[in-house]
Amino acid sequence: MIIKAIYTKEWLKLRWYFWGLCLTALGAGSYFWFHLNFAFKSIEPESMMWYRFAQIGDKPYTNLALFFLFSAVVIAVAQFLPETIRNRVRILIHLPCRLQTIAAHHLLAGGSSIFIINGLAGSLIVAVIMRYYPPDVVWVAAKDCFFWTLLGLALYLGLSGAILERDLWRKSLKLLFSLLLGLLYFKNHYTSIDLLLVLVVLWLTLPVYDSFLSVKRQRLHSFLFKISILPLCLLLIMIGVNRYQQEYSRHFEQYYIFFSPILNDFIYQKNGKGHNFIYGTQEQTFDRVTYESNLPFVYWKNLDIQGKLPIQINHESFDKERIRAARQSLQYHPSDLQPKEVGLYPLFNPISNQGVIPFPEEALALKSDRIIVYNCETVKENERLSNEVNQQLLAAGAIFPLRHIWGKTTNMKPFDWGYFVKDDMGKILNLRRANNSISVAPVPTPDNIGSIVHMRITENRLQNFYGYAIDVNSTVYLVSYPDYQFIPLNLQDFDYRSMKFHLLADPLHYLVRYDDETIYRAALFDKHYQLVATTSLPTP
Image: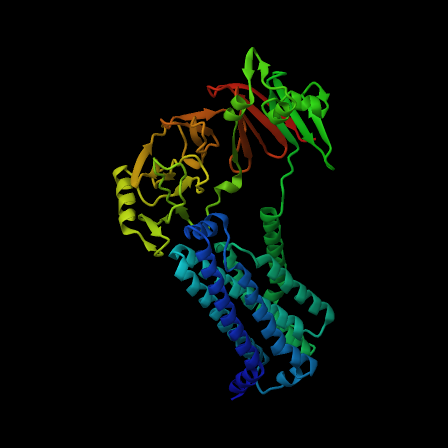
């Protein structure tokens, strides 16, 4: 009878808030459907919306995430603030029932309300997403709603404990902990490690019970509770530091290193604070005007405006057309190794007699035993294309599952070289679609090359190489066009796990600069990819 009375009392207290939040969820879901439907009808082709979700991380339902937290705040305040203001909590703790049972059922009543409300909001989001996106995106939307619901429960428990707590100091700490938890776990991308939030939710019931005890001027004396506080705080600090490094930390480039064909030497720009720069070589420094004049392939536009082009270097003439045509830039960052949250890639189909590559209505997704090609118009699998792609892959010797896929996912390029995929045995294959036909070409890799961990495809008008590849030994290769030859670049002490690089091409050389934030290095190669010179500059 006591338990039933608790639930009846809590329902009578929360019912209007509960129904109000449910109606708000319905309204928000309806608006989301209207907004998403308008977005799909306003963009052509509609598959651009898939591209924005999968490749840019633009999730159309992100703004609704705040509702999951708002509902938790409303329920926590409505459930316990009146009891505290009117001092009715003391009546609860004197019921003929164990305080643990009383606290547990109050939390179950509030937590169940939040779970139902947020479950309704999440179901509406997933239902709308299912109408416009393939299952790969639906799964991510469901996952996000699940974690936002968990975060809502954690915020509910934290606020409830803060509201019930009698000691002002402890109340402040519990409130601060709740707010920090919400800030740290409120994000756009969740991974399996974030399931630790489940343990945090379970742990938060202990501080709430401690707050119930504070009404009787008692405390929770559990040894496990006390020793768990420090590890949990350390965990939150680690999560906070990691998130800051991933999302807000910015690497400050101490040096920009180039090669001057005028001086026949490496030249640098040292970046100081307050936009203070030092220009020079290992032997001398000079002003900015001299610095730019020594780098005609970098500041060629300025030289052109000043009427100093064409320029003679080693008895060769270089005008702006020749300089511009030879320029090329390729970059790598260790964050490039992180897989996309949604493995959905546009399947381009360039037509020979058309000058522009249209953005396709089809997108492919890697599965454990095959590739699936989805059609954006129907939001279903295109079985004919799926079968054709898989047959071509199997005929080329691919072993499923495919472990990696690399390619340029935009149609803003002069031509399309398709995707390079890595199968379960480490074999690299080039998957392409052109003129309504699928083709797969094996990419021969020499035996002395380690397992490929990353590739970047250029699709540059120069068409001198497909891009670069990095193997497990941190060796960087340029993949020549059209014969797929792997050309090693000698980058001493390069480590792909922690270092980035930037490859720059000009009419005479290839320059690769890279650093570990302690030593800045540069390697110069000729047009036959032979190492010419190297330099290094320590961080001041």
